[in-house]
Length: 126
Image (cartoon, rainbow, N blue to C red; front, side):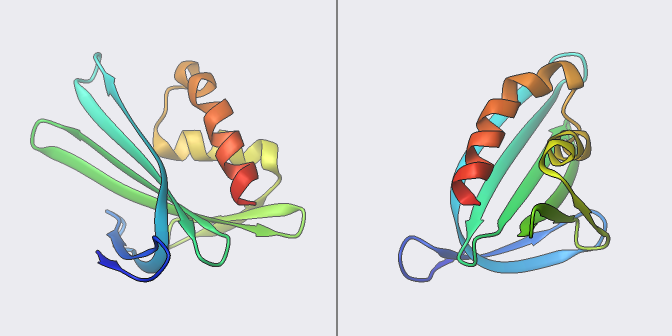
């Protein structure tokens, strides 16, 4: 990653679905959690883009297995567009939360723990 001005960096991400993304942005927030039942560690990173959009990077791993996904989120009028680099769809804000948590593989019981932080970050960036 190389620096590009006011705290922004040029960032490259690759997903397991074959999608790749290059963007200029900055790390806005990061959280990691460990799931004892699967012995896996998940790292969620939120990047703020220069154009106001966001990129969520999710990397999970257990032992030698690792999965990498990313999702771009941008406002589209009163709705939000989410894409994994292969497929895109448009959702209202309340469905966006459920979708991101589901796509990130976050246990629904733990989703409430992250929802307030996610909602606050999304509103600040939007």
